[in-house]
Image (cartoon, rainbow, N blue to C red; front, side, top):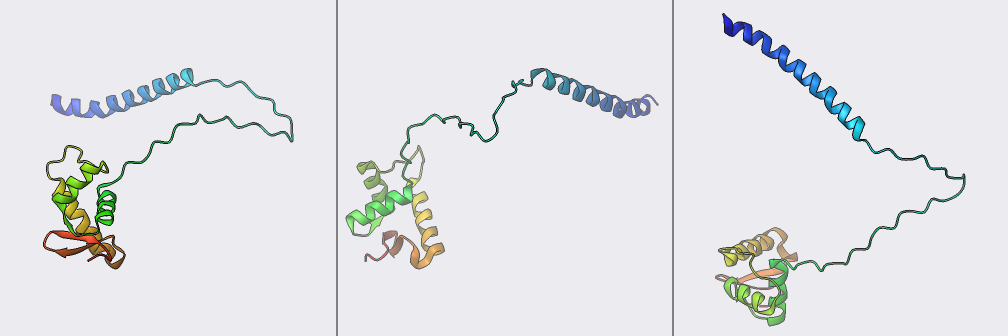
Length: 137
């Protein structure tokens, strides 16, 4: 019997608490709202925009696919994915961010690009595990 009474009281208590919390939150939001002074702008005059602080442009990191395409273009010969990973790291284009199997990841990405883009792909599979720049044998 007591459990039925508690079950009937709980929704009313939760609803009351929720209403009280909403009221408290609204009061807190009203108290902490920033007050801005009114600005007088003459009609027909332009308001100067606030100058955004200039941040220095950081060069974008090269992706593994971009680095592989660059290495293949420079060498001009087909390479396997482990060879590509070593060449990309040696030339400073890309290094694995602590991945366990970067060669497998690169292989999957190159295969996916070759199948989805078709002729427009940057890569072409020329042998078992070997890729070349599209247009280079």
